[in-house]
Length: 351
Image (cartoon, rainbow, N blue to C red):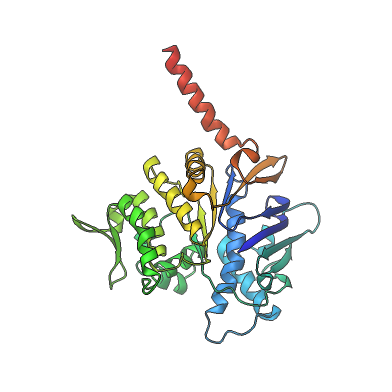
């Protein structure tokens, strides 16, 4: 599991030292505060390691092998004009330093690049072993409706879509999990399929369908909120989100109604109990409250959450962190939702 992320001069962060829970990590902040950047930089490092572990000619990690692979991944995930664009820009040249610390020290990863870097990354600490568990990244947009032929088109043409889309499509198309883990998969799937109103099928032509008592429905005909749940269901069904894996989910609440957000929150907590390390980026008060309610239940007493608040201080973003929401201070995006609720109540009283 990832236990710590240290950043220096990375995008909007002059410095940050984030200490993670092995279960659930929730990053909260306004738009442009760097929530997604944190998810993507961790994902890029993990995905680089995991992708190399799957190659038939893979060998022990070396600096000469890791540096170009990591640089390519960062560029393809963030899509900057040059890698140096990810370094926090100040007068003169600055270096961006990033360090990932794991409970298994053999996975520790440290690298840097400067503001004038094009595609060059300097790896200061090379992992001793490759990552064995696939990281999964769920973007704000659902991908099941564009899945048919997307990977082939992406690999054969230059597209401005970030590479997380391609990576997630590969995981969505993986074979279903069979064997001893199948029972646990079904337990996790049951509440999600109930919320979706059916199960997910992938046909031989590469199209996803929602199947229920009324028949089979093509994904473009299914509501977007259900499609987002379907992505989570498929990643569980293939076994990607099982046993010491990693889930990165950018704004799970996007395009979901409150009822589905409740189901998503339940699934997130359930996954974190199975050994999946979950990282969420959100600015939804409703999702935060739902997670807080679930985490106070006795059944979830063994889930240790960690919360991070990103807030602006001049032209930089600082981080507050704690084991409970009330430990991370006021959050502007959430304060506005609370203020609106107060105004609504007051308007009703005046009427």
